[in-house]
Amino acid sequence: MKIYIRNPKELEYMKQAGSKLGSVFDRLQDEIRPGRSTWEIDKIAERLIRETGGVPNFALEDGYHNAICASVNETIIHGIPSKKIILKEGDIISIDMGNKDSTGYNGDACRTFAVGNISDEAEKLIRCTEECFWAAYQVCYPGHHLYEISMAIQKVCDSYGFSLLGDYGGHGIGTQMHEDPFIPNGYSPEMGFGPFLREGMCLAIEPMVMAGSGKYVTASDGWGIVSADGRLTCHYENDVIITKDGPIVTSVDSNVKRHLKELGLKA
Image (tube, rainbow, N blue to C red):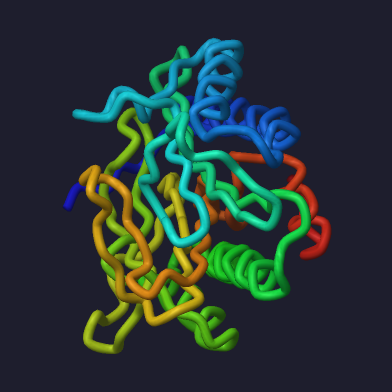
């Protein structure tokens, strides 16, 4: 495992990439509505990312050709945008996307959006998933351990009675979208505590929560991960820098600003 410690200049590049990605989410959210295909949303997201001076880094991954992953309802991650998938009232959709900025540094974040009016269960699931992240965010101080992030996510998810997508999780981020360390979403005592968090580490923390059992299958396209019982799923992700004064979230949009205000923190 090779965990990079970024210098001040590199951290500024990470903040720049994250800020640009956050602005894309703020512009994209108004495009999430009934009757729109996930293919259309993908094309809009690509245009918005390119307008910031970056490129969609998802399309740089081997075998993937889209700017976003668009995962609807029972699909939790890696949903491929399609002209055949038309959003309808009551759906929830996770838009996972990233940007490789002109500096060569990456952003990677996800939001789960409501399509019109949604069920009480869907609202609860989105609330739980976002709370999982913000509980994890608050342990991101130098001297804490990596798996305290996993513990915080697990504790919140358990309190809601939901399940985590345990085989997947967050990761380091920098000049590559996916770097060490891997951050498991679920926690069990045999994992121990993991490495120390250190000033200058950059992490993408991304709880993935399922209303059902937590069991999943892979879609026929080889990409999508789908709840085995067909229950709703949710995904939320932000990029975080570890500093001596506490964590900084870089992928700032209106959603992040709301949570930071609720926590009494500054963006």
